[in-house]
Length: 110
Length: 110
DNA sequence: TAATTACGTAACAAAAAAGTTACATATAAA
DNA sequence: TTTATATGTAACTTTTTTGTTACGTAATTA
Image 1 (cartoon, rainbow over the protein chains, first blue to last red):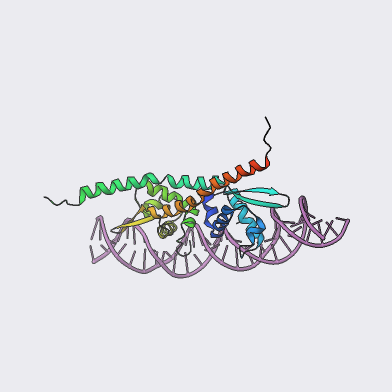
Image 2 (image 1 turned 90 degrees about the vertical axis):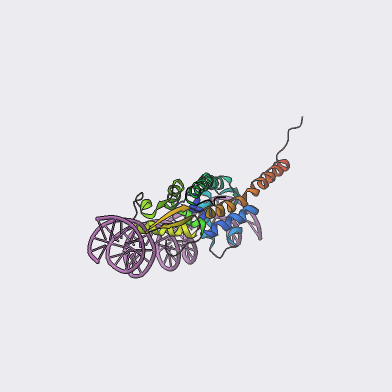
């Protein structure tokens, strides 16, 4: 938890943080409301929230002394974009498999 | 690095492992070929490879004493699927913003 | 105004991750 | 068959993460 992680992937590495995102997705929740659903202490949750916020997964809406967490699309988009850069390689790999088979696997003569 | 991480998100948390995936995406590479591109020792790379393999991001093709890393789609799919479960919430949030505005923001009378 | 509530944060402890060196082993090359 | 190469793994150390307790502060409520 250390300082202020901004790395989206590191932010998602913790299962608890992913759970928090799931909760917040359903409806905005205050820090305490989130902490109630976990075995860890409120300060620990508070730090998780900060990491998720810095990584762009949630935004905070301040309402008096309460702070509500709402989902922020940018973190998700960042991850999705990274993943999508790999998609082109599946077809590339498929083609190289094709040419490999064409070159190395004997085709039965008719 | 400890034991055998199988969690896809944890596997992606390390920037070095993401770099490895980028490298392997371009073309299959042996463990040593990968290690040459990093400042860390070969054994360390070897462990990263194992984590990526266990998490479903790469497969190993054994060729004699060499082991080539090739991309495996399953890890990527898992992450992409998780991300996509959140997509429905953007529209949900947008609708709740709409209704909030409709209820709370005065519309100038014509 | 005095409690109470909803937080943040500093200071530390425990656990996990990441890296290293020192071997061991199997294949390939001389 | 000796030597070199490509790798895995065990044993440890260092660094990062994660968590806790204790305390501070601003906003509500009584």
